[in-house]
Amino acid sequence: DPLETVRQKCEQTEHCIHAREKLEACETRVGSRSHSEEDCTEELFDFLHARDHCVSQKVFSSLK
Image 1 (tube, one colour):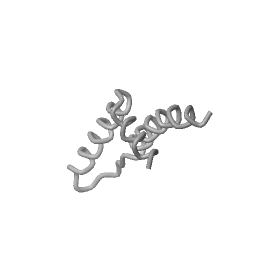
Image 2 (spheres, rainbow, N blue to C red):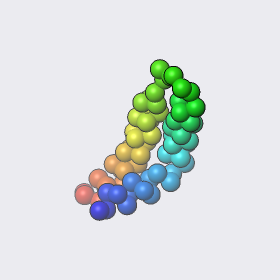
Image 3 (cartoon, helix red, strand yellow):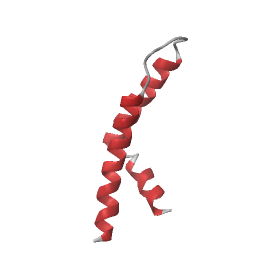
């Protein structure tokens, strides 16, 4: 699937790497606590937004 290929390439960009690091740090922090009300929704959405922004530029430019 070409979309998966583009997503993988976009995940290697600096902005996505930074967002993924924040997500992983949050997951580690939440996972280390037995009772935590914190979740990593914001960090996940930030990562997905960064990746999808990159993907949209690459995919839609090829449709023109």
